[in-house]
Length: 307
Image (cartoon, rainbow, N blue to C red; front, side, top):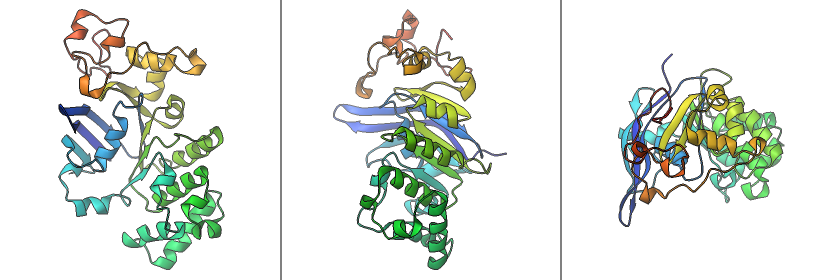
């Protein structure tokens, strides 16, 4: 079965006062139907930039190189009008701040109905019925929610509403960008249950962007660990999390409370001043001289000369 998404040699750079700032470097990933791929890493590693690059939601002046192939067509070479047809209906996105993803001055009902009509899925009357049905399935009072504004709803309710908006369009690919950020434990559990339904039909793919390793372990089939704009380890989730090879992956897992809460020494370097060689070598206890000069290739799922 063909992949829904194939990212090849993606590099993203932002303009800076002293030149380009590399946020993503030579990243390659693929995602098949019915599969969940999680991209994990510390804040600022570039994982959310990948999500925004796929949907072409990066600010003006951003340099994007490589190929982002969605069902055989390169999204980086489509016109803006062509992208408008793909965003929402074919590729849906669950943002990390649901209350900001919704228009605060527009009733929720209109925000759920209009996209369905705009993409030609159904009439306005049928769109309203479909929207109420999805809201009820998510445990919400459909009639009250449809006539409410986003600011009248809690964060957990807004997250359900955003999920409803995405699912109503039946996209082939769903991107969830830090969807659990800021949610309490109960809402995280509810959101995980919602996201698990995305791939249940075996036709839709889920690209999960998260810093939460536990969420990634429960939802994803495969995992990619990012550090300073590069993938340092990737593979089947169970294998990577049970037997991590890269020192950074081991450090991430060791820093979890359940594993002793041992932080990785040092801090991530700014993207505007990355070290030579392996980007992780200044924080790595196993670094050798070649690690300081040469960037290792991603070989057998690991970007490390010692692994």
